Image 1: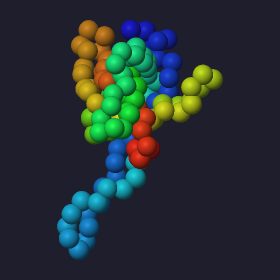
Image 2: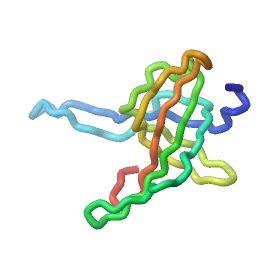
Image 3: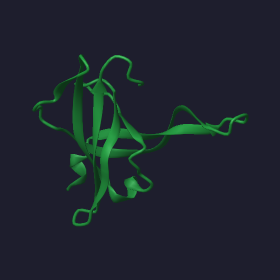
Length: 123
């Protein structure tokens, strides 16, 4: 893998949580930036990407994301990524659904993230 392949600037975000003082339960807040990285983002080609669940059509846009080893420190599947807009695509927000997996040979992290397109999805 060469550095020239990493042509997309992404931001990792994690859900902010607090503890309710009255009940002691966890209260989820907004998303907070944890780090940035240059990445190779490769959309997975469509094949049965659209499904029908309980009469609601949901479209998934999975993508394979690769980053350098040093940029992946502390990366977990509880995070999401925000891909900066460019000339062709608007900004995208994806949740991490698989990985991260460390690829020893190329010293990089690879994970799969997907963007869901449905009404009511939290940005």
